[in-house]
Length: 443
Image 1 (cartoon, rainbow, N blue to C red):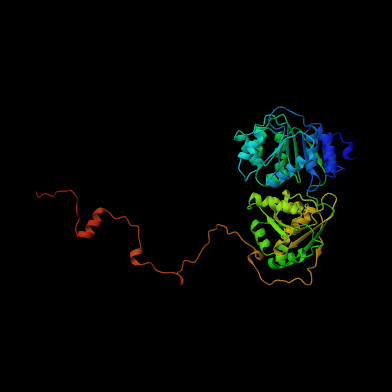
Image 2: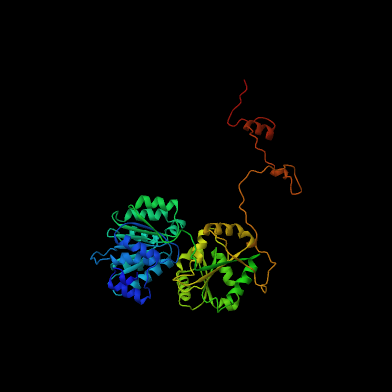
C-alpha cells in the first residue's frame, strides 16, 4: 500500500508527497488501523523504523477543531533535540491545516513558552519535566487532552523520569488514548503500562534491540586511547567516503577531549554536542550537521536519540557503550530511510567484555578489521587505558608496631583523660586540701 490509499486528510497526503514519503514502513502500517480505532498501543520498534510518523499520522488524522484553548494532543520525548525535531515534523505535516503546535523543554526560561500556550494550542510537544512544570505552575490545563503519546519510553526511564511520568498520568484525564513507543521492553515499562493503560495492543516492527540489516558493522581492536585518536583522524581524512559522520563517545569530558585532539583539517569540518553545552550551541551543532555545513559531529549517548539526520553515511563508536542496547541506538543513526550505512567501532583491551555483551545482544559476531598498516601505534599510556577501581570501606587489620613514619608526641601533647577531684587538685597545688567557703573554728 501507499499513503494515497490511506484514509487520511488531504493536507496530510499533500505534505507527505512534498516530503517525498509515499510508502509506509512496517511500524506505520501496523500502527495506523489500531491507533485510529482508539485503542491504546504499545509499539516496539528500533531506531530508524519510522516511529514518528507511526503516531503522528493517526493522531493528526483524528484531530478535530475545538474552541477549547487547551491542547487535545500531548507528545512526550526525553530530550530537547527530539522535541524540536518532532515539532518541526508536525509543522511540515500540518502546513495545509489550521493546527497550532507549541513545544516545551527545559534549559530555557518558562515565560516565552507560557506566552506561547496562552494563545491556545492543539498539540504540545514536550519533555516530561517541563510539561509538569507548566501544569503545576498553572500555565497549562490538561483537562482536554484526548491523546497522550510517549516516544523513546525506555530512554525516559533510563534518565529517571519515572516519578514525573506517574504524576503526569495522574494529572491528565483518565479517559484518553495512550500511544507508547519504545526500542526495548522491560519490567519497569510493563508495570507502568499495566497501571495506567487500558488493555493496550502490542505492535512490534522488529525484534527488540536487533540492528538494522542494511548497516555494515566492523570492529577495530585498538591498543590505547592515543592510537584511537590516530585511527579516528585517519578514517575521517577519507572525505569522499566519510561524507557525513557521527562519532559517539561515552562522556562529555571525552567529547571535549576528542574534539580538541582532531587534526586541524578534520576539526575545521567538525562540531560536538553534549548536555553541558548551552542550548544555542546544541541547536547550532545539530542544525549545522543537518544542513551539511560540516560533515563530522561528535556526540554523547545522552543525545544519541535526539539526532535524526538523514544521510548519515557512517557512525564511529570511539568507545563502546556500557549498556549494549545503546550500541543499537548509536548505529541506528545511519542506514535510515532505505539507505545503506556503516558502523565502525573501536575496542580497547578494557572494552573486550562490553564487546561480548553487544554481540550476545545482537546475536552475531561483529567482523574484525585489521588496523591500517600506515597507522601510527602510540606507546603512550593514559589514565583512560588503565582500569579504575572504587575503594570499598573495609576494616583492615594493621601492624601497630611504630615504623619510620612514627613520632612520639611531645610531653605537653600527651593528653590522658583522668578524672581528678577538686580536693586532689588543691592538694597537688598547695600541699594541703583547701575547702572553699568554709570557716574552720577551734574548739
